[in-house]
Structure formats: structure tokens, C-alpha cells
Image (cartoon, rainbow, N blue to C red; front, side, top):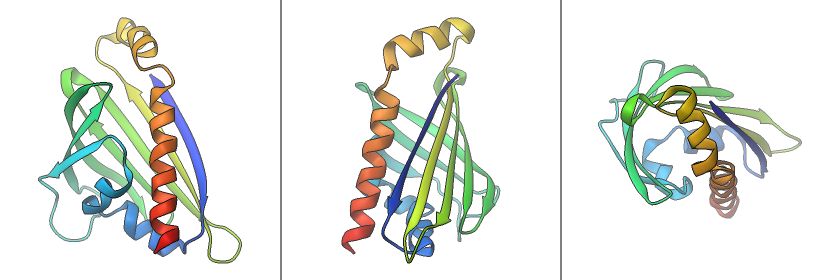
Amino acid sequence: MSVVHVKTRINAPIERVWETVLDPNQLEQWVTIHRAIKNVSDGPLNRGSTMDQVMHFRGISFQVHWTLVDVNEPTRAEWDGRGPAHSRARIRYELSRDSGDATEFEYFNEFTPPGGRLGVVASRVIVGAASEREANRSLQKLKELLERN
């Protein structure tokens, strides 16, 4: 399993950050590897909501089926993802109020590639630091999106 943990401080109220990161239609605005979204559950997202996301990473497009497994508005959301060849991912957003109207946003991603131990070793070689680099780029885009509006 590979783990990515990155964080940023966003000069925007926590409620606005929450609304943005929990809106599947806004993923294209800030998630660098996002390509498309479909089959999103109706209504506001809550525990048990699902969506299918097409992503593109290291020259390969793939689809992940996400289920929102934990939500505590406006401070925590956790998604469980099922990808190709029995790969799995767990993404967690943790938000906290910072001084004034700012928000501390933490992103955690635990990824289990297919193929057992061999898959884990291969994933480290193939993916390397690229996952963390893309997570940092995505958070930078989120910060810019929210701070300019």
C-alpha cells in the first residue's frame, strides 16, 4: 500500500472549501488527474453516496467506483474506491478552521495496487513520487480556485 498525505492552508471559509471538494461537478476544476464523472448519486452527497470517476495517470486512463463511507460536515469526508484489477483506494479530506476565515485542508490517499506484494513493489517503482506530486498540484489548484473567487 502506498500512502500520500499533503495539506495546504486556503484563505476561504471552511464551508466554501467543503462545498467545493464535496461537489463532484467541481472535480475537473482542481483534481489534476480527473477526466470525467458519471453515475453520481442524486441529491446532496451523504454516507453511502456513489460516483464513477475516470482518471488519467502516467499515460493510462482508468475508472474508479467511489462510495462515500464517512462524512462529518464540514470537517471530514472519506471515500472508498474500487478500481481496475481489484485495486483499491481510500481518500480522506480533513478540514479545520484556521485563524480568521482560512481553512486547513488535509488530503490522505491510501492506494492498494492489484497483484499483492509484487503489485506493491511494482507500484513503488512505476508510480514513485508522482502520486504525491499530483496531490500537491491538485491542492494548489484548489487553493487558487477558492482564493480568487
